[in-house]
Length: 79
Image (tube, rainbow, N blue to C red; front, side):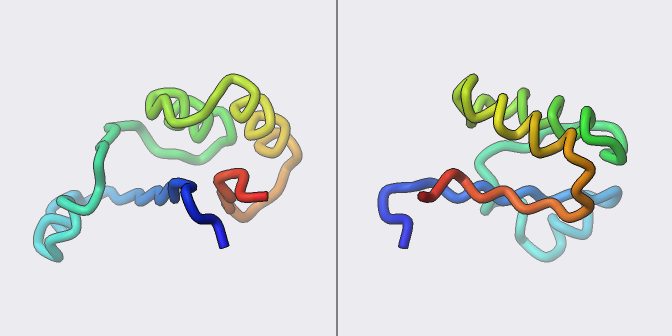
């Protein structure tokens, strides 16, 4: 269990109105407008805007993003 840790949930959509209709916008503490996230550097730019990670954590994310993994799993360093 990760008590005392924050959970990062990323949600991407091209239709913000759907999230609004589902009353989900209010559950997010920050909304970042970005272009299509199709490359690792796009994800990194988005995460940089959140200011949610320390520089060391961002270095770990950069190494992970550059490794070519296809599935996005952000594990908020809960170890």
